Amino acid sequence: MTYVALSAAFLGGALLVAAIAVVRVAVVAGAGALAAVARRWWLPALVAAAVVLLLTALFDNLMIAAGLMAYASKHLSGLHIARAPLEDFAYPVAALVLLPSLWSLFGALRLPAHTVSRLAAVSRPVSWINTAFPFAAAYYLSIREVDAVLVVGTVFFLVPYNLAMYGVNDVFDYESDLANPRKGGIEGAMLDRRLHRVTLVAAIAVCVPFVIALVLMGTPAAWAALAVSLFAVAAYSVPGLRFKERPFLDSATSSTHFVSPAVVGLALADAAWTPALVALLAAFFLWGVGSHAFGAVQDIVPDREGGIGSVATVMGARWTVRFAIAAWLAAGLLMLTTPWPGPLAGLLALPYIAIAMPYRSVGDERSASANRAWRRFIWLNYASGFLVTLILISYVIERPLS
Image 1 (spheres, rainbow, N blue to C red):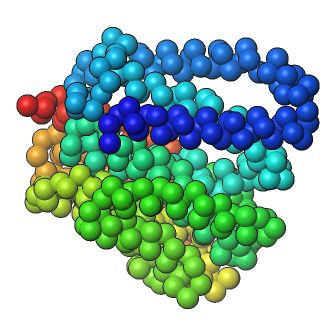
Image 2: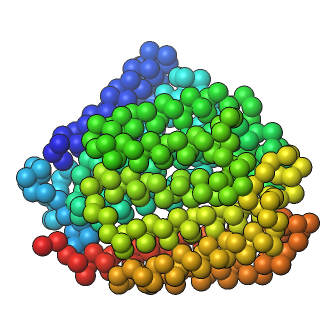
Image 3: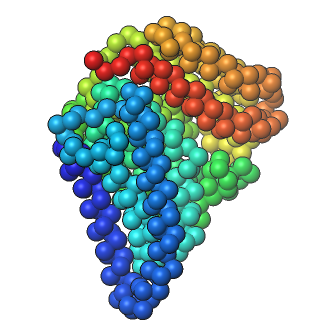
């Protein structure tokens, strides 16, 4: 597929949704209401478009000039703004058209604003990057090219995947979440029972088109990796499997949620599986295992009261914290075996160990106090992600395309 066709598909889909929204407003509220909406929103829409397109031109050109992005010329129209291909501007335009159109249609479907905001909260926006970035980095570093697979996969692992993962969890954890005092914020939405059906339907509806697209663009190896990823999303929470209540399997499954997007990206790119790549993925997996285990410490009391098993309820608070520290340490040591600049990423295990160390002897009765460290952990992920990005940029610059 050429970039022109890909851009046209995204922009065409957005324009189709916009046309449906316009017709809906005209039919339900009349042409006068449609004109009033246009008068009210034309200036904000114009300002937003100018800002987004300017930023797209700026950062596209900077990344292309630095050698971070490359395009196969045979798939381009040949039209550029400086170095940035014109096709790249279709995506921000599509977003500018699509978002207000969807908001209007949500009203037509009788989904009030608070329902839409709850669905957004369920998907944990603070964690979107944790799944989209591994896919995008793994795929792009393998092929060094922006194509349809990169765009579709990144969007899928950014929002739909997270809505499915956390939505399914919040629906089937409703009873236990009621007894958990830390639910209701960025650490987990409290999902009203009336929204359970809507959440499950929305999660399936937004995922299916992306999954179909990735299957059509992938190979059997990619299908298998995607199947494992989706199975882990469901198996963690759905009744009958409930891997989250199976000690140690809970941490492994949780880690799979974040490592599997990278594996899907590598499979779609038909990457070569080298010892260094295996070591990197193993380190990432151990980091995820440690992170889940440490996060489970703060929930020991409500989990036990609710009859829920976890790695932390079995091992107890102090030994679970030590287990998490050991997993992070092992992850850091594994990164030291990878080619430069990989060892720099190994140093990122140290701040995680540092925030956990004060709780290495915490008793079960005080396990909830680990929530203070967990809140630091959430923001530490952003700092670590920034540093990992710099390391990856260094890798790309040191190994330019031939």
